[in-house]
Image 1 (cartoon, rainbow, N blue to C red):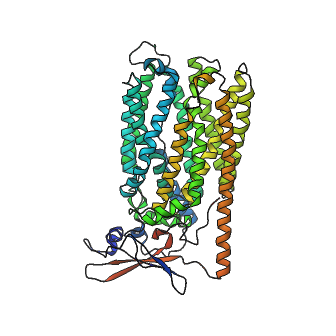
Image 2 (cartoon, helix red, strand yellow; image 1 turned 90 degrees about the vertical axis):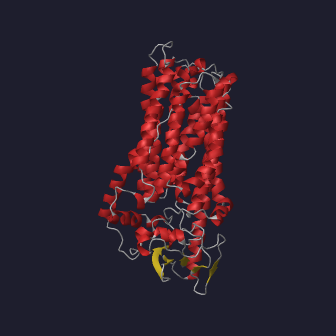
Length: 536
C-alpha cells in the first residue's frame, strides 16, 4: 500500500521533510483498486494519515515491546491520565429546595432534564467534527470550563426560564465529554485496558454520587431561609470543583501520544508500539467523507444507536432519584444520605465487570447481558412490592444501580470495534445521539399522577432492561458472524494479510521519501482492514 501524502502528512512527519515543503494536494474523492497480487493500492488518497506516523517512522520493524517495558508504560500513563478522566456531576439539588425556590412544578422539573439533552443532541455532531479538527484535550477542557460556569450560574436562577436556558447550555457543553474520553483513552491503551479504564472513569461518577451525597447532606443542614440557600451552596461547590478540573485538563491531559509532555521520545514510540494490536490507529486531523458514509451504512452503527437510546430511557430514575426515594416515606435528609449506596452499587458492579473482563478478554457482550439481569429482577420487585415495604423497595433501587456495568461494556465495545478516525468519531456521535434521545425522553413518563408508587415508570424500566439484553445478544451475533466470514475468506485465499504500508512525502528539492508504517496507522477503516477482528 502506498499513500501519496500532502501538506498534512508532511506536517505529521517533520523529521522527514523540510519546513515549508509541499506535496501534491489529493482529491477528497478516493478510489481504491486491487492489483494482481491483491495488495491494496491507493490511487488518490485524502491528505491525512495518523498523527503518530512521524513518531513511529523508522520503527516499523522493531521487535515486539518487552512486557516489562509495556507494563511500565501503562503504569506511567495511568499515573498521569487516570486522575483527569473523571468529571464530577450531580442532580441532587431538587430535594434541597430548588423546586420551591425556583417555583417549579414536577412537569417543569422533568422538562429541565429534557432541555439538557436538547442542547446535547444539537451540539454532539459539531463537537465530533471540531474534536477531529482541533486538539481534542484542549477542546474538552474549554467545554468543561464553560460547563462549570453554567453550573455556577444556576445558583442565581429563581425561575423556570432561566434554569431551562442554563440546562440547555450545560447539555451543549457536555456533548463532547463522553466521546472525547472514549477517543483519548483509545489512543493510549489496549482493547481490554480501554474497557477497564472507561469503566473506571464512569465508576468515578458513582464515587461522585457518594461524595456529592455527603456534601448535599452537609449543606442540607443549613437553614432553608439562609442566603445562599442549601441548593445554591451545593451548585457553587460543584462549580468550583468543575472549574479546577477544567484547568487541570487543559494543563495536563495530552491530545495524543505524540503531544504527551510526560513521555520521552522513546516512550512515545513504545506507547504506539504497544497499541498496534488494537488495529484502530490513533488519530487523523482530516475529515474523510467516505469514512463518514461508511459509518452511516454500517449495520453495527445503528445497533449501538438503538442500544444507547433504549438503555438511556432508564436515566429518568437517576434524575428523579431523590423524589422517588422521598416518595417511599423518607425525609429530605434521609433521602440525601440514601443516595450514597447507589453510587457504591455502581462502583462495585463495574469493578467486578472489569475483573471478569481481565480474566476473559473477549466477553464484553456476555458481561453486559448478565449485568442487566439483576435489573430485570429488581424491576419486577419494584412493580409488585407494596409501598409499605420501604426496605424492600429501597434495596431493589440499589440493585438496579448495578446495571451500569452493562452500559459501560457496550460503550467500550463501541470505542474499539470501529477503525478509521472519521468513522470512529461518526459512530461515537451517533451512539451519543441515541444516548441523548433516551435521556431526553426518560423523564417524561415519571408523571405526578403515578406517584408515589410509580408502577408505570418501573414497568417501562423493566421492559427496557429486557430489550437491552436482546440488543446486546444481536450485537454479539453480528460481530461473531463477521469474524467467521473474514476467517473463511482468509482461509480460501491462502494468503497472509499485508501488515505494512508506505507514506510518501515530497521534499523541497523534489525527492520522494517513503516511510514504512503499519497499515492500521494509514487511517483505514475496519471494513478496509481485512486483518481487523471484532472484539466481543
